Image (tube, rainbow, N blue to C red; front, side, top):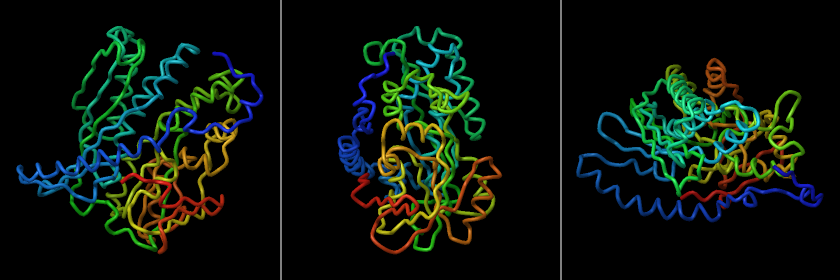
Length: 376
């Protein structure tokens, strides 16, 4: 690794687009795919089922099968495996137990936004060649981490696929993905924003760090660091180790909320697009945030070295908030207590108000409007 020495490069802002991810190019395809997919819902009728139309454009797809709803999602890890591979070369450690959890979290944290209890996880591990699977330290760490995450979420690991895709996946690399199926049972647990209204509270659940979004930016930033991934974020913590902190699994919180008699009005998994994901629901309402969570050291480090202002950082990274739960105001503090009892820090961050569709992060003087997130 050859750190950049050009002082002008060191001082320039590094955006997510410059790191190779441009949502302005990706999102139109997503919208086009959604429209084509919606036309296929008619096929469910032949089986006596129907789609829940409001789930189109949400984080998980929901089908009405009669006595309950069926929810499903597929998600991939992205480029975090590249960080694990680089850190293994530098330290000799395998981080695949951690990124196994990241992969499952990408799917399960999306699934639970609609009120579903995760039921089954399927694995997709596509390697650049058969040799990848022969490395026992790495492959067994992946298996152990995958099972541990399933146990945490009380979900069955149903099976999976392990193709060797030489010429498609780079040699020595692996593409990790997970599909998850869950049940919304009873049906009253469905949380697609159908009851979201002014006066509801916004509760934010803390993240453990970067999670598994923004890694293209984080990897590009390595070029600016004096010791690459081994550059210290804080005493005793390298940049690489900080990036590889596993994503929080939030399903124990949502299940505990159900047990406590609290039904969220809406939920948002804060992944790609950062805090703009708080605008995911299509209704025209204002989301006013009066309190922001502490920002993990690694995210402060990225913002500082990428020379990003607050608006850029909060539009890309989770900045300490990994999951948002919208609840009735009278349930807000109890929601925080339930989350903390599950080992997840939380805070009442704001409220829903009447008004145009916008997110106001008051402590930072940031505004995101309807045109800042186009997922439908």
